[in-house]
Figure 1 (spheres, rainbow, N blue to C red):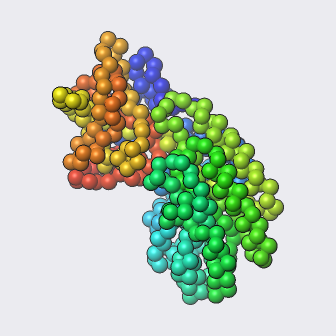
Figure 2 (cartoon, protein in one colour; figure 1 turned 135 degrees about the vertical axis):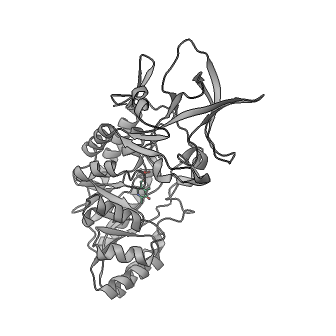
Figure 3 (spheres, rainbow, N blue to C red; figure 1 turned 180 degrees about the vertical axis):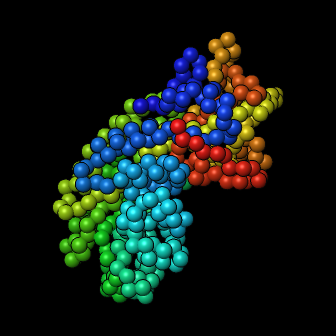
Length: 395
Ligand SMILES: *Cc1c(COP(=O)(O)O)cnc(C)c1O
């Protein structure tokens, strides 16, 4: 199920020959392979327990056609702002398919969520519980909430995408639970329907998930024993992909299968639905960013491949030292291999997409594809330096 492949030294994305696509499309360009996303979604769905529902984390990719695909497949969404709630509603998601997460929900955002009767608001702090409770009381409107706990596990991913460690701003400590439960007596319109966690992103081993579940499952039972009718166990998202190896799919298939088996632990809990919030794992592999080489700049120290895209369109390398494979759209077997630093036009030294990459020699005006840019690519893009944002198309 790999979407990128070379045939006769020409790069294909799915069945599309990129050389041909580039005759009619301008770069920089995000391209998404919908059939790939659909296949990945099916793989994920087949491997998680039967009582698990998927809520795609739309901050990973909010392209209208991508959202449409998930909506048609009866998948819900996980959102983190009013803008995302609005976009999800516009894409046809029903309010009860929307889960609202995030540490900084404003009054306006909470009012929108309550007015729309969305499925669940994930509460991230005691002050937020009081704010939401007061708004629900004033509106006299039943509001379903879940407590997001910080299980204090170290997911061993990049520190900027760790969210379930004690030093992170996300979730609430276990020791706060008694205070949170007693606060609920002030707010009769709040209904505590579940617990939720999300320990980080780009996690490629199951141990941190396992450790977090081992802390959360007893808490779930103990809150139920105190008379709260919890119905949902939300396990968050966070599965990662091997960015260093864009064509290889075996690790991802194995990770998804084993993740599904791990969730059987949660499926054992009686009368409890599992909610999954995957983002990256469903879409990252099925997006590329196509760019054109503007200049080859040779200095005494480096060969720079200067592109018409950079950190403003794909910030992950700058933000997290993330690795993305760089693939020439055409390979010329008679050319030599050269060590490049692949950079953008932005006036920042951190505008580097890839360092020390040995590539088949590339000349100015030729094209390259940046692999695995389907998650946290366009959604994180900006207009820094007053450049246009890239166009997005689906194949
Ligand atoms: C970002 C996020 C996700 C998705 O994370 P991935 O690593 O892309 O799977 C899920 N849940 C919450 C609350 C998030 O913030």
